[in-house]
Length: 420
Image (cartoon, rainbow, N blue to C red; front, side):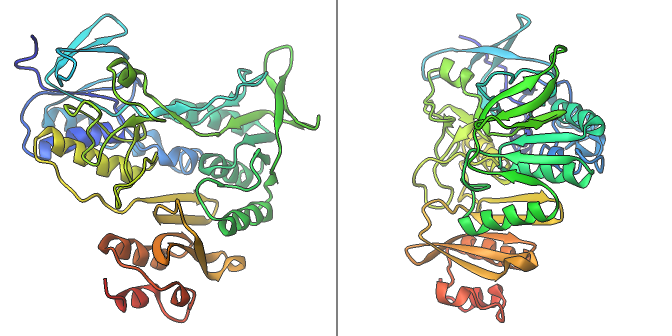
């Protein structure tokens, strides 16, 4: 047996990992905490990487969550550039054990939290490893992409999701010739309704970004120096490219969890209390698959700052033996050029949408309903609508669909008139 005096090991110096450590201290935990991360920089904000940081409006220093002194003041040992290769438990259902690092080190622990995030999905096509083919997940990726964009003329973005469109908007605003290519028939297809997809297609084209939908990619082409020169489409057309950004999703890091025998389903499976299939081990953030935060049904991958923070707080409370709840309403945002999309709730399973406002004016919202009940909102440059629905979802309330489209009445007033 080991670890009678060791404390908590948090694998993953991510937003979720840092939040677990911070919450443990807030909840009164005085045991040692070790926060381990692969990168050589302290935990930082990732959302600005495809927005303000990519355009030079934010610095690396401004992205840091905490000052170096904070970790020492809180008694949190931060180990950077440290790769945990495997974890050995004291017993099959134990929460204590030892982590083995890539350099042969051993880190004993009494409690274990996994906040290991994920890695960008790669394309299984010829040329995917050429110099100039980029992904965007961490600050090193962003630094590399920013330098390449400065010298580039032609940019191809593969993938019409949030990361791809945010980066495409930044590159277009910088005067680059940008083409977004997606095999799907609409942008943001897994996240928003067709009405919102159509709006973003028109909006990006108005700003000068070319968008090709329902378009397959055969290969990425390069020169004798192994540098990217173009993207060959399924019909044989070649798009010239000095830089190719691949933004086709995130693969959750599940290797350590699988090695521990934990249940994995597109991510590390956790319950509402952030417990893995070994209830003595918790996990939080982008690496997890969790029940719907409000209904407790199904399994969802939620890649957002809000989920990372909320789930990490729950994980810390669970480690302390005082589970907390209920979970907060999921929310997300995306800045694409001067368009701010704010999402509250999860729209999966909707059967009706109500468009409130005029998309052509680039200020509107889309409300999602399932069996007559409001379940989510997408608000584009409409923060008041967003806040009204986010608050309402938190109380379990709804707004009749037949009233929601009336822009002469603020949504907060319609919400206030509804009896929960």
